[in-house]
Length: 141
Image (cartoon, rainbow, N blue to C red; front, side, top):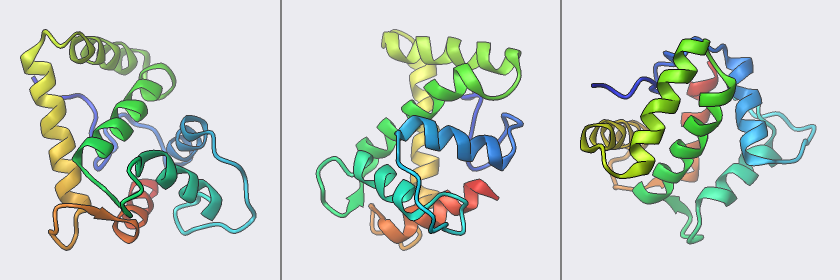
């Protein structure tokens, strides 16, 4: 079974304004007047980066991206898409959180690896701040 949501393809049917709102709510960032091309303010992008670059290495690794995606999917499971989509996503997240459904965990990790590889433009096995900002911009459009 495939993980039912891929941020790169936006299969949940939410428009960019809903995704922008989700990022704003998930990451509890502050408003700023300077808008990035993604529609998030520079302060919001900075807050998002600061929350997930947990080791302050200046890059996002696989573990940090996994945390970001889990947070986003948890928010999406209650707030985005159709009721059917939210129910399916909640079921998949419950299976992942239990640690007992190898197929669900494998599908989720495949989605994380796929997103990581898409974001890691230069192939150095880490997501730089520039690559991160580009990825968020692409998600919004």
